Amino acid sequence: GNSVTQMEGPVTLSEEAFLTINCTYTATGYPSLFWYVQYPGEGLQLLLKATKADDKGSNKGFEATYRKETTSFHLEKGSVQVSDSAVYFCALRYRTGTASKLTFGTGTRLQVTL
Amino acid sequence: DGGITQSPKYLFRKEGQNVTLSCEQNLNHDAMYWYRQDPGQGLRLIYYSQIVNDFQKGDIAEGYSVSREKKESFPLTVTSAQKNPTAFYLCASSMGAGGEYEQYFGPGTRLTVT
Image 1: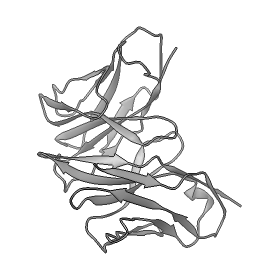
Image 2: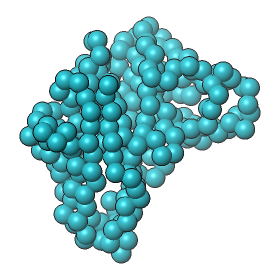
Image 3: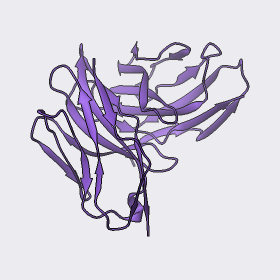
Image 4: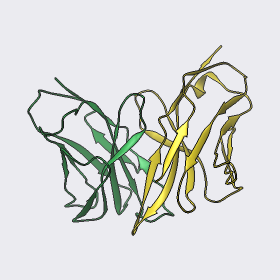
């Protein structure tokens, strides 16, 4: 089946620290991979994506590389800000019939302090 | 502004009552989705619709019902048969249900049943 495993949170960092949130996946076929961000009380926003192996998704200083050999899509940012505090979800998209579906990880809460 | 509207933001109901959550989009998207989010868990797919007058069960459809009479609207009814209805409900839409289309999320409705 298809599944996503994320590192447990919460992750607490000081401003300007380096961030890594681990994500590994299990999938049949060749899924697309995503990171979504959820700010308190809000819906999910797409942060970045990668659609094939070795692709690097990037946005707002965040990056993630689709590693087929390690089935991973770890999220990184070189210098976090207080405004990055949110819950981050790793997800994969797979096809089923004529539709595609998203499978999400459990989310990792990031808290950035001054 | 184009987007997805979910109302209300907070909803309270007594056990044994059915309740309908609203989801409206003005993005002219064909596909719409309902997810449920519980603390410490990722999003789980309840129902999805690829086109007007058609919908399919997701992974946790029991105790829920939907309709898709208009392209822009995809209401979700949480019935009294749903054993644990208290959760955060997210609606999403995409241009199509195929693998190349991104899903955009609404702000969510937090349902509390006592």
